Image (cartoon, rainbow, N blue to C red; front, side, top):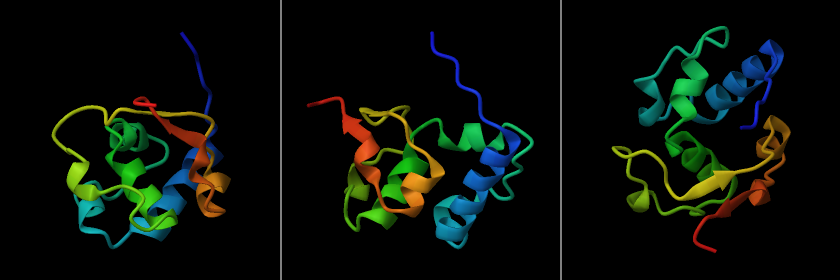
Length: 100
C-alpha cells in the first residue's frame, strides 16, 4: 500500500486549476462548489472522468470523450506523479495506458 500526503495548499491549488479550466463546463456544474478542506476533490477525481476532461484541454482531442464512460469506475489508466504544474505546463506524459 502506498500512502500519499497532499497539503491543504496543494488541494487548494488543484481546485483553483480545475475552476480555471473547467469552471463553466457542464460536467463540473453538478459538483460545484468544490471545497478544498473537504473530500470533495477526492470524490470528484476518483472515477477518472475529470482527468480525461483536463487532458483534453491540454491535448485537444487527446481522449475521445465518447469512450469515457461516466457510469463506471476506472478507464484503464494509471496516473503516476502528476502535479498541478504538469497540467499548467501541458505535460500529460505522466499518464500511461494499462493496455500498453
